[in-house]
Image (tube, rainbow, N blue to C red; front, side):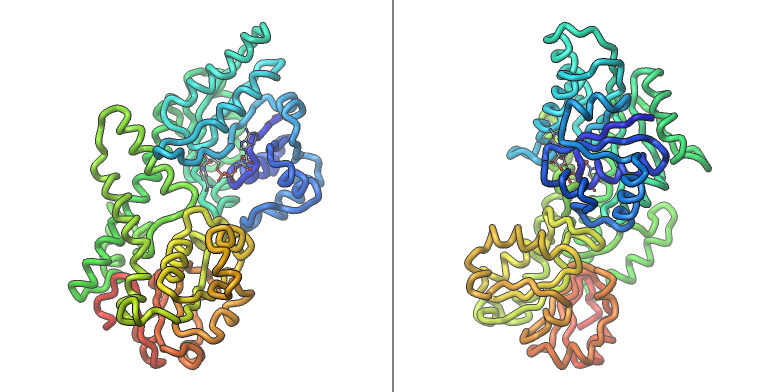
Length: 452
Ligand code: NAD
């Protein structure tokens, strides 16, 4: 099948590459000419395990093309995916300007019947707006063409996106037209071989399903974070509690990890957008309200522990803190809403200096942090270094913020020799408190009330 994907970010590029891998002829379009130039030169603009060889393989086979020309891209596809960003607007609602602009660009150019697919995460009712945007462009140029708009929200996880797309646990198709549904079924056939993962529904339910999924996951995280904070007060260990409840099949073991709050490009913005959607209809989502508030508070938990350990603001001034992990989660270079950014801001404001390392997000982190804290970079109060070991040179303490594999089992004796003030702040509960303490280090995790 001939597929066009508009927007070549984490979702668009992965979807495009995977559709090409399944034998389709795919053209990916982006307005960001630098991104398209990188891709056409054989490079890859994001870090996503397994993506680079897949893109290369399909590009070489002529099944995966990249363009910044809407004329070319709209002419190419019988199925046109919209996978552009839907960032939060100032009032928390999803900013639909990119998706509606892409829809208008499609409407200005289509010359045959197509299926337009909303792949981006968009509020309920957006498919209607996309349909109107295309129809009004068609009317403007007097074109009488049939087209359908379907919703096909994406559930891939950054860091495991290729695998998630190739082996999805569900494929949601929201469609109000049998013909368009049949086209989507055909496209997803190679991803749906062993047992049926297609879930077909109406467009509005599909749109809401995506928000419901992210809201539920965010809820689990905030729930566990609040419970972790209570566990600390009570002298209980949230890790034991996690095992204790996760073995109940009604609860399940995933997404029960206490930490420094959720970040990333999806949960924060999707929770906000769903709250706004509800608010616009005069409905308060009390649970989700609390989920968001709990998460905001949790982003400060590691700083609060560091501050408490060193006796407050006077004790913090002049300390140099090593930070392991900058991306919002492991296996991605995505820094959007990363809790590390909050912690770094708090440490710098308290007069600490920071020496940070991340396996892949260093460049992206530097770009963002240089804009936020230009003076700190200039004065050396903030440095992004090239290895986990470099981060430990001449520092007082270590804070683990993102649980990359390479931070899993450090040599605690070596750490004890490096860290002047002999303390680890484990924002992801990666370490066994007793093991850390045996090396002569103080340990602070999240919700590990038995560790003291
Ligand atoms: P992204 O920011 O990585 O990529 C979006 C791309 O769209 C950018 O490259 C941008 O240049 C391009 N773009 C913007 N306006 C355009 C236009 N008018 N025409 C052509 N290109 C345009 O975003 P992403 O993370 O891939 O997310 C895309 C959508 O998918 C969002 O709605 C997001 O909520 C949703 N989503 C994201 C994930 C994820 O893990 N990142 C998972 C599921 C769903």
